[in-house]
Amino acid sequence: MNQPKSFDLTGLLAARGGERYALHEQHMNRQLPRMLHTIGFDKVYTRAEGAYLYDADGSGYLDMLSGFGVFALGRHHPVIRQALHDVLDAELADLTQFDCAPLAGLLAERLLERAPHLDRVYFSNSGTEAVEAGLKFARYVTGRKRIIYLDHAFHGLTTGSLSVNGGKEFRRGFDPLLPDSEIKLGDIAALERELRKGDVAGFVFEPIQGKGVSIPPPGFLSAAQELVHRHKAMMIADEVQTGVGRTGDFFAYEYEGITPDIVATAKALSGGYIPIGATLAAGSTFDKVYSSMDRVLVHDSTFGSNAQAMAAALATLHVVESEDVVRRARETGDQLRTRLAELVDKYELVAEVRGRGLMIGIEFGRPSSWKLRGAWTALQTARKGLFAQTVVHALFHQHQILTQVSGDHVEVIKLIPPLIIGQREVDYFVDSFVAVMDDAHQGAGLMWDFGRSLMKQAVRS
Ligand code: PLP
Image (cartoon, rainbow, N blue to C red):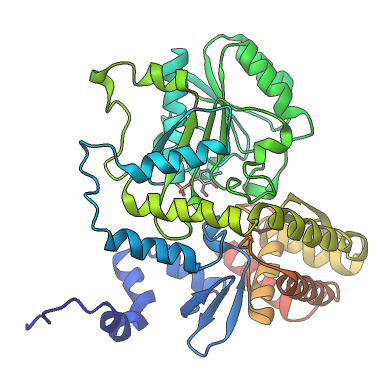
């Protein structure tokens, strides 16, 4: 077969892009296309810009999911694109492995300005790697084995991060994992009990949990920090999802007035383009882990610090500052959350609205009226989380808004839109959510029909 001389990406996409679902079905994890068909999310998007995805007809979808938090600055931000063009055109001698790449040093310098109590940064390629580095650093520095984590925690899916995952659905079948221990969110006495055993290296936590958008009770994290330090262990903040402005502070732990010993971040730092993970820690931590020239590569990653990732992250931090993104996220988030919280009194199915900045959870709960209770209970009996899935489905199909259920077996939908959304998106989301709730509270109609079809599916599987 004659191969064309040049590689024609545009031509390849035009010729074969239509086979996307079949290709996944045949060559990749086939449960993804299966799941997308089941929940009716099997769309073909052809373009994206800012907070919107577009299908082949040019019809826009409001993206309140931002690639699980990656697109904090929206899609295809011109400043980040330009930085990537520039770094490619610069033809740098990148990944030499035996030199000190300038962009990595500059990014470390900028990032540490946001965590002035820390001194050094290790760069990797993903959130889970950023957490893994934190777990390893804590174990090495303290010479102890055990990490304490919270129920429902999510820190990534490589084996170390999985050892501190608070969800059985992820852990099942992958054991034995590391000898880590779970405590309940907010249970300070349990934390103290574990620390007293004297073998705890660190306590890892999300300042706001991605699953269920659960917020630690006020004062819990500062009390935890006091205890953890008293017992000579380390506080490891997982800011993979919450970092870079998501919650209305650059790092979400700032709100709690704590100073974690290790901070892991990723997702939004990429500008939505090049995967990156960053683990920040004190100079003394780095000096122990990398204590001699022999140990220079004792924790490292081939692609960490690559020029494209560094350029995208530097441009991201530039935009975060120049466009005042953190303040905007706080103000837009306050407005969106306040308007949604007003619906708790209006709709019996809406139990609570919580979150901080633009990380918002809407929790549904058992209705009080007889009219709705039968349908609600039937869904709950089949599988917890199906009502939230019907809301996600209705928002998508009736209003072209992309959201997600916030984890397995929870009746919570999570909103993590790009931080650059404004009044138009807030109004559109609230109006659409109100329309979906009006529909749901009639106790009949399309929404409940979809719920019933999900219910049958759940019972079958
Ligand atoms: N930590 C948190 C809080 C996350 O939300 C995630 C991903 O969703 C991770 C870690 C893992 O990040 P990654 O998927 O980039 O490995």
